[in-house]
Image (cartoon, rainbow, N blue to C red; front, side):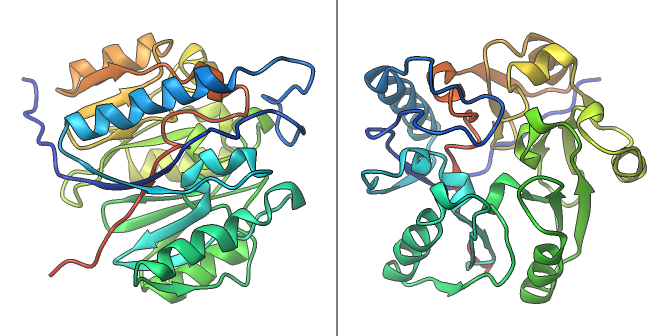
Length: 277
């Protein structure tokens, strides 16, 4: 019997890729010798934004800053839990200015912000699943940031170690499909994680969707779900089939130009979670 899924309204922050290019290499997807098409990146991004708006979600925009081509990957800019903003503190100097830019945007909108003392790359490595926060480590985010976030939010933060440099952020190896605390569901690619972290995931999420290698290499796990509809990379055909079997509606949205920088739909989408009334 297929479970009936329910969409819930979401609030996102996005940043146009009008300055997008690959001018440096900080992950295995980036190749400065490979040409990028900024206009195509903008068209793909606009289509992603239009998809969210068509579904009734709210999308705010932050103005892109020249010289920060990766600013389009808004999910890396901060983490918002219960209306509290935990700033990003990037590993690589090429992206360092993005953290303060995103923090200023939130402060200007009236949010309470907390400047991170520990290295973290926002929702790239910090994902909420129900009442629990999953924290990625191994490449970009320090384990100490997980403790800092737990103290700040009062929520449990579960550390997961990433071991494959192609899946350098948690949101490239794991997707939150249903964030309902009563029935949380994730999809993930086991080889991206250490054996110990695979055991943690298996114990906590025995009903999780297991992504195939082809799903992972298409960056299919860099997906965005509203509880019923799921934006996925068109190449993630196995994942899409499994989502349908579970009662979800996968929608293929092409972000292949942005993949040249190592990001997909989720990387471009920072969720703003306000405190519940």
